[in-house]
Amino acid sequence: MGRDNKQGQTNNASSLPQTPKQEKISARAAQEEFSRELSQLEQLVLERKRNKKNK
Image (tube, rainbow, N blue to C red; front, side, top):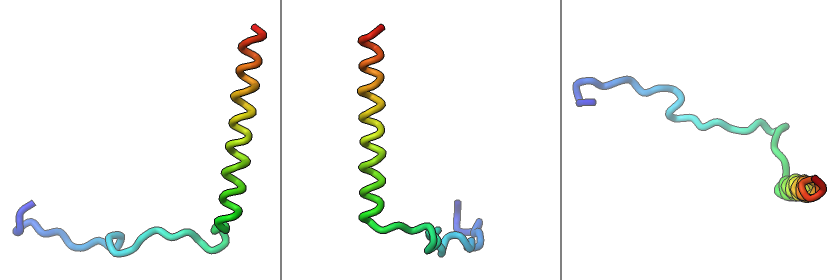
C-alpha cells in the first residue's frame, strides 16, 4: 500500500495474548506431562506392532 492509503493502527497490534494465571503450570509439571504422553505413545506403538505380528 502506498503512503496515501494509510490505515489506522488496530488495538490488537500492541497487545499480545497472555495465559491466565489459573491455567499456567510449572516447568516441572510440564515436563512430567510430556513424559507421560511420550510413554503412552510408546505403549501404543508397541501394542500396534504386537497386533500386526499376530495377524
